[in-house]
Amino acid sequence: MNLKLKEGLRRLWRAEMFSPAGFVQRALVIGVVFLLVHLAGLREYTSILNGTVGPDSAGWAGSAFLGMTYIIVYLAFVILAPMLILAAGMLVVWQRLLNPQKKPV
Amino acid sequence: MKPACLETMDRIIAETLQLEKEKGMTFFLMPYAKDRPYVAHPARSLFLDGEIALMLASRRVLEEKPEYRPLLTERVNLIVQGWRRSPHLALESYPDECWTFDHVVALAALRTTDYLDGTDHSTLIRDWVAMARKKLVDPVSGLLVSSYSVDGTPQIGPEGSSLWMVAHALQWADEEFARDQYNRTRRELGRTTLGFSYAREWPDSWKGPPDIDSGPIIPFFQISAGSSGMAFIGASAFGDNQFLGSLNATIDFAGFPSEKRGALKYCGSNQVGDAALLYAATLGPVWEKVKTGRKP
Image (cartoon, rainbow over all chains, first blue to last red; front, side, top):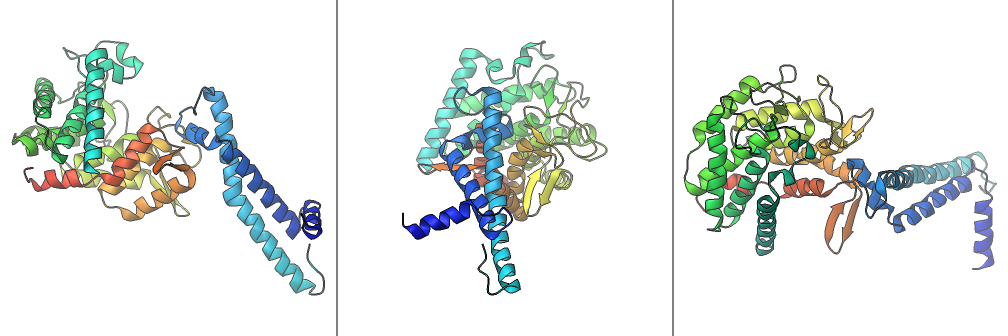
């Protein structure tokens, strides 16, 4: 990994919450969490929506937990993450309009 | 495609008949079917007879299979005899529980048998529809109730997981009544929010709990997975493309589709739900053949 990319990631990680980089950071975290739960196969447990337990012997409580986890993370990925990205873009434009000399973070 | 579909249908029919023969009709029913005796003797479930008859008939419309003809005739005769013995044209699916859903499926089987074998059950079909209009329509919503006792007294009111299919199967019996039921169901139970459509289980005028048919009901919006899945059948059968399109948007967004090796399933659904969606996507040709009255 080159130094410029490392530095960029470090700045992103340390970004303030209500900043363009902070919004992007949270969107990325949601994306990564979604990728993990998706690859872990939790999508199958969304069968709880129709009152059916998930695959194998997870039982009702286990299926409900895994299914609800997937649904919450999925909704965050499809609704919240795009909003964060859009907000970051709007904030960049806003900051550039207010202070054209300063580089937004 | 057709040989593969025929093979699948034959396998399902054979397995169903075998299980019924080996384990009896209660194998396909919920445990409470054994809690008390059926009113009619010998005990039969219209749930089983109607659906098996329609399975056999639909398969024969797609392509004739001579060995299914006597099986269909026998099943239809049992239904007709039961109806003729019942003063209220009410056959049980469960002990003293007669389901509107099962009756209209049986009507569709009778009408399809008439098309296939040249029989005439039109009087019986007409009589049942007249009885339903008179006794089974909820006075507030104008929707058909879901279940009633053998003396024709309504038990459970209008519910979405039943009504969409009821309206569709009624097309075989009385198209005008079917269209009226669909329009009312659409108005009372169909909802669209921000381009996403779904269906409620109960109309405002009837309070009922979630059950095995409705699935869990999501509060506030009153979304029922069972009713929403069955709504695809209603929308498809009555050419309500706008509603169908927005139902599709919902299931693509919240049904959690999963495609593996060219096969699509919805993780948020189950086998019954997937079957309902497949039926909604393919229904039409059999009904068109039966309606136009062409012999195979």
